[in-house]
Image (cartoon, rainbow, N blue to C red):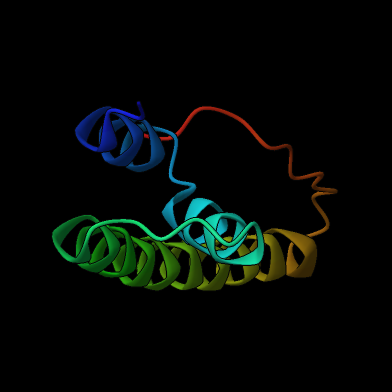
Length: 79
């Protein structure tokens, strides 16, 4: 049997709750309601965080480009 709390914790830790939620749905796997709700809440939080990170990255790269500094963004660890 699936340990739902471990699935939720791993999805949150790796910031993939939205992906996990969608894939479970596509596979026809129904998570218990508290787990599904937790995945959705975490996914919404992750989306807001990702938008803030993207906006800040765009602001910083724009500022650097305007001063003549070439910038290449790389995906990496994020706290």
